[in-house]
Length: 92
Image (cartoon, rainbow, N blue to C red; front, side, top):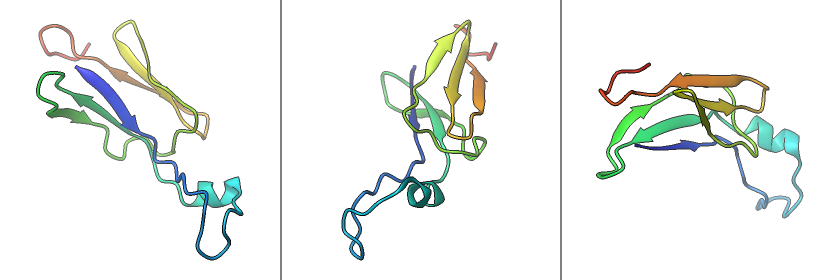
């Protein structure tokens, strides 16, 4: 399996109406939420998506794996934990 995520963060830093003037409250307001994905490493087929379970975006975050769990922290200081499937395909 391969794990990845869409950060949900609005990364625009240049705007037609104000050029390069940007600030974090504008990016925060236009951000959505993290979506976590598990993909089949051989085919790329999506095996799992967290959908909208995670309610904030990730800024300078990464995925961590420990003891059969996958972790990601979000901008609102929430740490999410997801169980990983074992060798028989069942979530631990």
